[in-house]
Figure 1: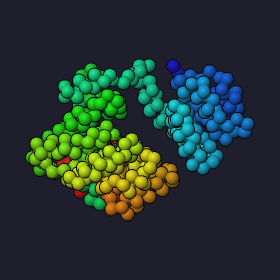
Figure 2: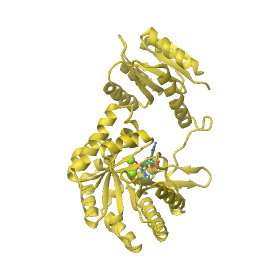
Figure 3: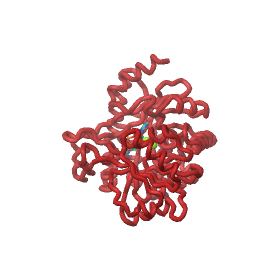
Figure 4: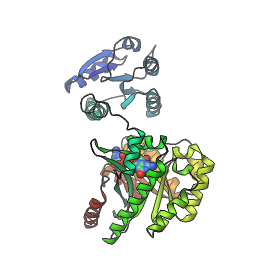
Length: 394
Ligand code: C2E
Ligand code: MG
Ligand code: MG
């Protein structure tokens, strides 16, 4: 199974340059100068299509539509001579047509930039789509997830959040994982949707809460006091008994709600606004901190901020990780920080992967930082050790 790079661009010079760049790093290449010609070719799932959006006669968007009508899903690199705004909307459209967009580039494109994208993104794409040869990653069944929760197979990892002024850890986000006896570690994106669809989120959240309360007690005994953030899903905030359920768990551990932040994603709030308003307002009244997670990706961000008593705004990692190369992502990140501060909220940036991103966020006055550059999520015991080295760094 070898991957071909298929270039669809009406400009012969650019097509030739891209083909040469790809073959220099070992890919097979094929070039089409017209969208219609390309559509008659039998493209394979492992191929990567480099598609120019601006082609006379039959443009890149029409090619996307035609592929989708034929139920063909390919990996794409989109290119355009227009501004990034056009590329962004084209990316969204391609994803809505179930295509994998592995990158997009504005012209003029340099050879190293194109080669870098192919080498880096292609590896990630292949591993995700064709893990261990051709095996499909299967979603678990509802009863397996139920059994995992009840059998104690869920574990919680913690990712540090540091104060950007002092670089010291102030809190952690709790992230659930499934330690499967045969399949190894399974990440939440694989099983949370199954739990949500099958009414298992109440149990799952209670189990995460118990682990967090137990682990934080152990840290406290070792002299480490931390704030903890826990993710809450749509299902949780449609159950009116949630505030009382959480309070009784906290009472059992003699803990006050003020050391906990509940993270709620914007898309969650879309579903049942009245019920979630009721529950979130009562949670806030009981003393929980509330964070709006993945901010900027939902549909009606601003009106949510107005209605719901959030104490923290978490900028989506998509914007943060792109903010160095992408001026629009940078403008959005900067505006989110200003907006959060105007509304008296603390602002957390997640997805910080480099010193350059860290420095820029410091310049913009962001309060807290979370990301691989600082630390990856880790088990509770590892966090103690990490906290010691984090202190010594200062
Ligand atoms: P989230 O709440 O937005 O969590 C942040 C995700 O970003 C985590 O993925 C984390 O590992 C990842 N991340 C952090 N820093 C970086 C970085 O620098 N680069 C990159 N590429 N990624 C980074 P994870 O653990 O796979 O969790 C995915 C999502 O699953 C979470 O997104 C959250 O929505 C959901 N989730 C996780 N645990 C729970 C839970 O206990 N309950 C509920 N309801 N949802 C959960
Ligand atoms: Mg979160
Ligand atoms: Mg997030």
